[in-house]
Length: 519
Image (cartoon, rainbow, N blue to C red; front, side, top):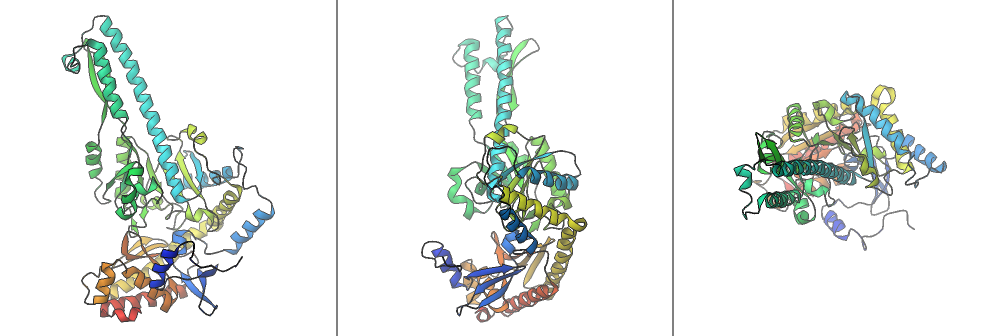
């Protein structure tokens, strides 16, 4: 078979059609460091600075020699890829390595148990399932208590203890205590049948699979599939006080019998409506918005009050990209679950993991969720090597991410200072940065206005940057005015200078309102 990409006859035909329109369709055939190489029409290779880096997947760049050599060695060693249901897998080494780093950053001695999958989106699905299993088991425990209390109340009534007027009023048919119990059980069963709800932040992105897409705020991604999975209530990231309001709106209760003050009465027991609260320490697809330390504290307090796990989705922001292994470390986020993927596979393998604090972990889940490639030896051992490289030289990779990111951010802020009418904001941490342009709906250029109307201006700009400046970069999915900058830690001063010149070119075109120069 050909070693170069084929034609879109049987796949991606519409995608290629759209990308071709903006000059973004390319046949990338080789990758090294921060550079992707595509084939020009004459068959020659053309190098492009890759500022997208697999949307944060490439901490050490494309095909890092040490990682490639390790991957080859693993294959030469005949590392077992498939050895499911053996118990002892190489994923155990990965889980131990992750615990060492995570426990250090969180300053805790708590264990975190690993649940493995193939990707970030699958790891979110694993999170959803584990959280719902936990909620279901808590409901079962609550129902068992109510059954025990009901039996005590029945014995008390048989011994002559009266039923309170308020409780007796539920027996509308006059059938006595047996009828009252039946009515309570009917109401409780109705409440228990309620589907779970999840909490998430507005702007959040947690994947596009059946369940994970319902925790993704963008209505374009979520809306068509609402009927397929549990729903979420979304909280504005700058209004944590609304969490209590949302919880109160969704509140439900089970009825429980008590014998007190010489009568049999009914009390309400809070029913676990919510299964988990998912957040990204740096919201990627929303436009690269880091959460604040104040919000992190409010989230922890709210989850403790509600009794639900706080889930930190570090799929894009984690593994050192922000300057620490977990982006949440910088804001003091204290999660019960941590989701990792993307860069964890060293930019080569597909791998996702959910780390669950021992105080939230349900061991039964290990026999209920399986994944063919979830614990495979190749990706697990490659990820262990990746962690070793992150930690090498006293965490030099983290320092590089912070230093290179600070240099790139300073460059972008200088552009903003020179073009305040064009650049709205520069955000992010480490090498997860967002460069936001002012919205151009009121542009003096008819061509620019039309591009905005069709949500195509980001594609126009991306095509211009690729053609003229040989820079590959995209906007964030839910904030198309924000360009996403996520190169590897080996970002050079020359590459920063190239981006500086390219962004200034775009800003000047928008200031001059001269869309013809995008051609």
